[in-house]
Amino acid sequence: MTDLTTYGPWAVIAGGSEGVGASFATQLAEAGINLVLLARKPGPLEETAAAARAKGVEVRTLSVDLISPDALARIRTITDDLEVGLLIYNAGSNTYGHEFVSGDLAAFGAVIDLNITAQLVLVQHFGAAMKDRGRGGILLVGSMSGYMGAPQIGIYAAAKAFGRIFAEGLWLEMREHGVDVLELVLGATRTPAMARAGLNFDIPGLHVSDPEVVAREGLDHLADGPIRLADGNGRNLAKRNDLDRAPMLIAAAEASKRMLPQSGARPRPDQDG
Image (cartoon, rainbow, N blue to C red; front, side, top):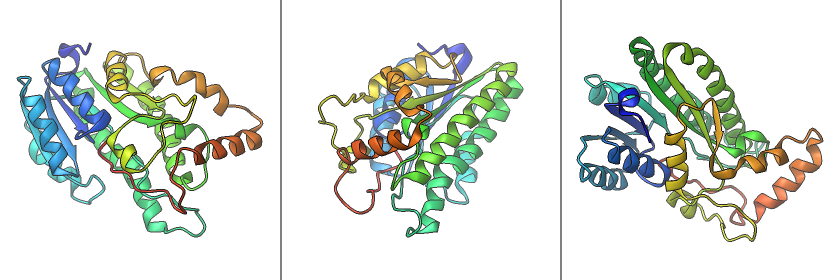
């Protein structure tokens, strides 16, 4: 389990109110690490915070939209007096799905801002202090979507591909300063956000992970970066790396239709799970 001497005494979890984020919070609280939980929805945020406090740790919360211009300033008001030894960025999601050429560029921009820009802001802010101290951990939650293009979610998939390459470069830079970097790549995961989006997880043969399992794996392998495919999803990676891309992309797109609600645009899942 997480080594307190390396990653404590405080952890910041962006997207820490439910699903995988809540599982991270629970498991870190059980390890005795104090928490700062960031999410948009105050209700689930406070429920997760209360459960963590019941395990004996201190918890600070902030209901914040991570893509708002003042997000970092607001986060700093509750973290500047803390020694943050672990940052978990679990807030990336597909907030807008649509065919690109007829879609809303501003909405696509929000997908990029949440999955790329806001992540970069928090990693730079908290990572700089970790580098100066010579210890710490940065765990970025990625997606199997980042290994191939897909209709309706092409911008999200491209943003996740950026995140994977960014994690590799960051790992190379920070390992010399005693800071562990890991991108934990998730496949289909049974979270409240995905349930609200209407995804069908009951397709025969579909491998679906539980939030508790993938969170545990990420924490147990923080020092094994730069990339870890969670809960056995590595066996699916070969299907996404075939050099004959056209038939592979078409087959994957057809398979994804069976998981998603039958509508024109993809639904908006919450960023907090």
